[in-house]
Length: 485
Image (cartoon, rainbow, N blue to C red; front, side, top):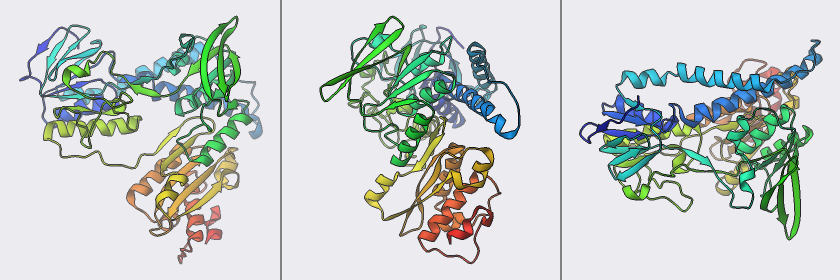
């Protein structure tokens, strides 16, 4: 719905700004609780997740996987020619998927059925005062409660020549696969760009200013992914020092960097910078509403997701918390609940499994080994993928599954996986952690054989043996779990 409608505060109980995962769930929850709700978004319904995030990224990652699997077919006696990527057709498929997801999203019909007024393509929203916003399309909306869900944007570098670089969003929108690519920043976004375009045929160099890629992951995960990338001919450069700038070359772009006074450079057809994510609050005029931000520019919230104005809430990436879709969904639910019912639901510290669809995949839930050692007496157990039946069958023997267990409670503190189906394995581990299961209880579950889920039971059996937790019956003997006791 579009237009120049003006609604009074008596007509709007809850106004939600932004229609990404956090905003959609906030609007749905508020309306479900009986609030007269309006959802306003700068562009289309769905936000970054559907249009520039997990949906298009996962589609490209799936194409990269299909290319790799096609090259594996010969091992199984299936003769095919070398796969050839038609990038323009792939981009068309990405658009098809985005449209299909948007059309069949179960949330939009629910939003509409609950009577939420949705303003799409409203332009940038701007606070006039603490209860009123104006939009670029001319809307003026007043509400008793407001929930800010405007998400985030790629962080820019204040260096000469930055305008010569691209963001991950630009990378997804290329018309052809570049011959070579510099990827600057080796967090979750950077490694996905590097992995996908390496599979597509680009010569990729990955740069990290810090001592290791994937710095927020367990150290073993960082090392394993770096080694796998190098084996796949991705040049991994860690601890490069400071980035001084970028300059144009006859064939693309050059990055200049220095460490300890020693300058160096690298060139490629294209440079993609993925050095972080910042709150998308440009133009919001938060000061007009008295909404405070922290030193990083994220909206400050308390445990109920209230801002410095008690009737204004914020959810999702704009708060700078865990900037992921599932967490944004939970944020939206909590913020809207508190906006309607009063501050009764704290956000808490829920179990949050996260991962990335690189090659190889990596994923985590809970504490890293280094973090766990700071506050717990721990035991660790690792099962490598070259020793598990399903990975051997499928020809995916790179990787491992690692559990971190508290010696006093025998409960799992963390799970870290590198390799095929890492993300799916970690989701199961997240359920185990949330349920408070002991590691020996997990080892006793007779999971189907041979499966990737069974790897989790096997590593649990290994941990139980190390902790001397013996039972009368042992699960998954065909995976060798019986040997672990």
